[in-house]
Image 1 (spheres, rainbow, N blue to C red):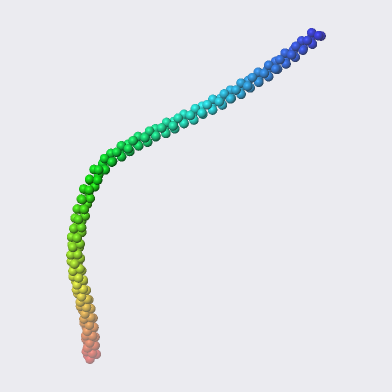
Image 2 (tube, one colour; image 1 turned 90 degrees about the vertical axis):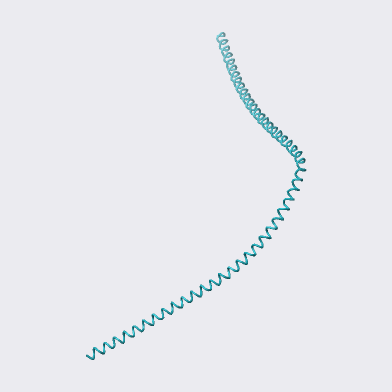
Length: 184
């Protein structure tokens, strides 16, 4: 009996030990999962940080290129300015020549304008003369129209008068014929 109890007790011990081992294993697995998750998160964060850093480097590189381009432009401007100060002397000589030429052109223009004014005055006189002539002609045409109208009116009146006389004569003839008829 004692030996059975001892076996039973041993069995219970083993069961407890197994349960403990199982629980420990489960805990270990959970810890491992948790660590894996944390590792993954850390890796993601690292990847993101790396991407951000690359973007920052790219932007800096671009800014640097822009700065270099700007420096190059500044150098060109300086060169241009040096060239311009040299050209300024030539330009002032050219300017003087241009001003002389402009004066000459203005004098020519004034002469041309004066000639044009004379010409336009002549044309105005001609035009006034032509206008007078055309007005006279228009008045003459109006007179002729009026004369034609009057002649037409006279002709119509005469035709009317002739028609009336013809009717009167016809009436007289009819009367005479009727008298002759009744006399028979």
